[in-house]
Image (cartoon, rainbow, N blue to C red):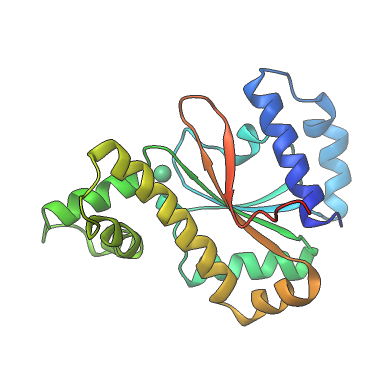
Length: 209
Ligand SMILES: [Zn+2]
């Protein structure tokens, strides 16, 4: 298995190809690759991303079958089943990079901001389970003085939510904590821009010495 930093480099290169409109190598999705993968998988990165139809991880990172272990949920929140999925892939396949992938103008973050401005009792309990997980990072921002304008607020809230999910994965599981301490597991936060197609890794990326 490749290291976390090698995996990060591969994702950066893939996103560059996506942004530059360079076609995927045919081999990534070829019938022979599919057959090869019946013997097993070794995804080189785990991606916890938003369900938003505009942010499919394999496409924005230009990766093929068997490359990414992807967990998608509205607002890229972390609940026990997301932690369990990350644990499963990191332990079973030895994958060493976890990316929390949020994006600009995330609908789940916008819904949380709306909810805080005008609490609605009619919201479904299931949807509340998502909003409630985003709420703490957004509330902190609303507590700042002066409160930023709406556009800035959304931007900051998206990033705060990504950071919170990444931190939850780093500290909310003993299995992952040990993999981080002993096995070089790395959890990073990244934001995809709907406008440019670029992914910016902004949280948890080690600085080159
Ligand atoms: Zn979203």
